[in-house]
Amino acid sequence: LLRRIVFAQEDERRRIAREMHDQFGQQLTVLKLKLDLVKEDCGEHENLCEQVEVLQTIARQLDADVEHMVWEMRPTALDDLGLQAALSSYIKNWSKHVGIPVQLHASGMDKNRLTPEVETALYRIAQEALNNVAKHAAAKNVAVVLERRTDQVSLIIEDDGVGFDLQQVLGVDAEGVGLIGMRERAALIGGTFEIESQPDKGATVVVRIAAPPLETGETDE
Image 1: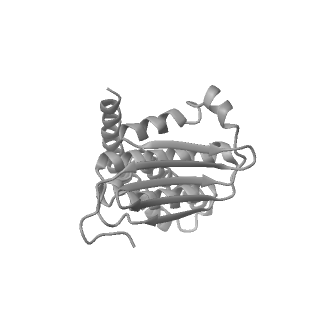
Image 2: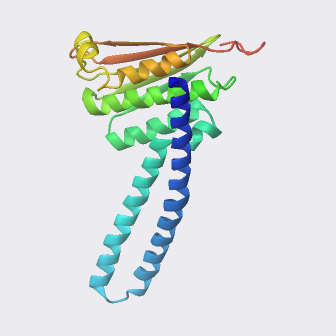
């Protein structure tokens, strides 16, 4: 049942993201073009030009906000290009949005793509872990490792933030910080989920799953 619910949620996310991109994206493009034309025609009407510039700024910000919402809902790169490309894009946008630098270290992911189910689960776990960093960690740096070795894929998200008492969080607010959701997503793809943290020592999320063996001749370096 949980698996069906997760699949249905992802399908709905995909549908909404595409509709938002198509509908709002086109309308905002037209709006910005119209404002550009008005700006060109305002001539010596200084007050009008200033108001148009304000509207142009609002339109650009609205366009960026819609793009961010679409990207949060369901990135097209995840379907089109795979987990590594989608995660790289997400990390760049997330880092720019929250102001925390992130280093992505990926290896072995260009051999064969994982199944859509596995790629989606790992992407969502990384997304939730980074959202937790933004909300709770007060971190200055984050490292993300995505690694495939032989028949195992590992996803690691590590921050240098304030950390927390793991036992206390697991007992009181595991759902509030998304730990239950991440653990359930990992379990749905047959993976393991671990989290390590101590006060003032940051936190580390580790997900490991079994992956199909690489084809002959595609061994790890």
